[in-house]
Image (cartoon, rainbow, N blue to C red):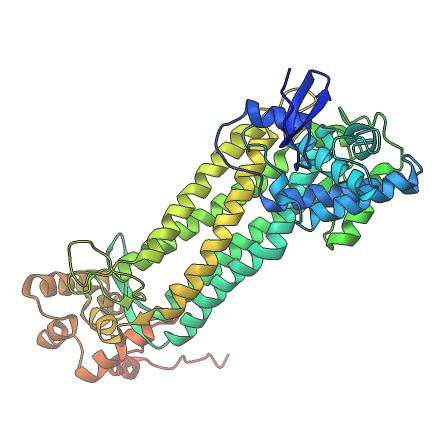
Length: 487
C-alpha cells in the first residue's frame, strides 16, 4: 500500500492504489508510466502536446454537439483541453518518449491532465474522477489507437507549416542572395575533384538554392498524406463506441482551428494499420539532409585554407577554432549542418523500422516514430535558420583567387574543341601540364590561334554560358555562300 503524505494524494486504477504528487494534474496511470519507463529523460515534443490538446478539444466539442457527454462536463473539458493546446500545462506531460507500445501511457497522461484540470474548473479536487473521468468523459468515443496517430500527424503538419518551411525558405533565400552577389565572379569548376571548365560562383550558389527548393517540394508532397486522419476509428478502425458523425465533426473543427487541409481518411481501418505517411515525410526529410550534407561539404572545401586550401570563399569567423593553434578559425556552421543532417538520417532509420513493424490492426511503435520525426523536423528547422543567418549571409568571395584558378585551369582548353578538335586540344593540355605554361601561352607558341582569337575563344566568362566559341576569321572568309539552283 502506498503511504500518504502531505505532498501526495492516493489514486486508484484497475491495478490498485498508487501515490501521485498532490499538485500534479496527471493521475495514476501516468504515475505508473513514470515508474515503469525511466529510460531517456526525454519528454514529448511540445507540438505533440499541442496537437493532442487540439484533438481533445475538437473531440469534446463534437461529443457536446452530438449530446454524447453532459454539457457541464463537456464545457469544462473544452476549457481544460484549450489550456493544454495553449501550452499552459506542458510541465505535466512527464512520460518518457520510450514507453508502452502505441502511446497508451502518453495518451492517458493527456486524458488525466485534462480531466483534473476540468475537475478544478468545476470546483472539485484533483483525483476525484466522479466529477470528470479521464476515460468515460475525456476519452469518450476515442482510443489510443486512433488518437495517437491522429495527434502525431497533426503535430508534424503544424511544425512543418508554422516553423519548418519558413526556416528552410530562409536558407534557400540566403543562397539566392549570394548567387546574385557573386554572379560576376568566374571560378574554375571541378569534377572528380579535378579542374573542370569555368563556372560563375553565382551559378554554384544558385544551384544550392534550387536543390533546397526541390527538396522542399518533396517534403510538401509527402506531407499531404499526413492530412488524412483516422480519428473516429476507435480501437481497430471500425468506430466502436463512437457516434457515426463523430469523425467528420472532429476533423471539421481541427481544419477550422488550424487552417490545415485536414480530411477524414477514406478507410479508418487502413489509417490505423498503416503509418506509411510518417515514413514518407521522414524519407523526404532524409533527402533534404542528403542535399544539406553535400552543400555543407562544398562550403567546407571552398573555404579551406586560408593558405593551403582552395580559399575561394571565406565563411564568417564565429569562434576560435583550436585550443592549441592560435588564430585558427573553423567552418563551425558547416560542421554543425553535417552533424544535424547525420542525425536526421538516423531518425529516418528509426521511423522506417517503426513503420514496417506494424502488425494486424495496429502499429504499436508509434511513440518512436512520432518522437524521431518531430525531432528531425525540429533540429533541421533550427539549423537551417542559424546557418542562413550566421553562415550563408556572411560568406565573402575571394574574387582574385577564384579568377586566378579560372584562368589557369587547363580545362579551359575545352573551348578549343570546336575550333581545333579534341585531339589537338588534348596535346596542348599535356604540354601545358608538362611545362607549367598556360593554355594561351602554348597556343601562341604553336601559332594555333592569334592573341585576339584566344581572347575571344578562351574567355572564361563566355564559357559559363551556353553556346559555341566565335569562329576564326580565316574560317569565316573561306566559307562560301550556298548557291541555289535556278532550275
